Length: 113
Length: 116
Image (tube, each protein chain N blue to C red):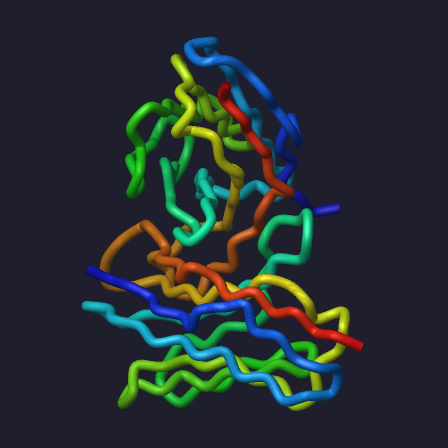
């Protein structure tokens, strides 16, 4: 079945540091890939998405590129801010298969001033 | 404002006492779903609904019931709650559902349930 694997957290960075959160996936069909962000005390909200190989999703300075050859969708940001502190979830939807989106376990990011 | 509304935000109950968590969306979405979020396990889907009167099990449906009598509402029912159902619950919706491939999910703010 489909699965998403994210790096363990928490990731702790200083403000203005470079961020990478790794995400790899397995899927039987043709997945679309997503990053969701969960700020403290809130529900998840979509951060960015990519629907086919080599697509790059971007939003709020975050980027992720759909790499079919390495089955990866790593999240990056060049300069993090304290306000980026949150939990980040990688997810996939398989257009050829399940009605159940698959989420990773989440990676907590803590950014210090 | 487009939103998914869950109630209550916090709920403490005792084992065996039936409870309902409500979920409502105002975006005319066809697809609605319930998730539970537990430390170290991430989000796991409980039930989903593709449209009115159409519901199906997710990954962890045991101990839960749902109904979809109207398009906007999708309540989660725990007939006889147990302590292992203590968790953070999220309702989510999207226009047509994940098989369209790029459907964005809209989430509610969550319900923290404690079963004593």
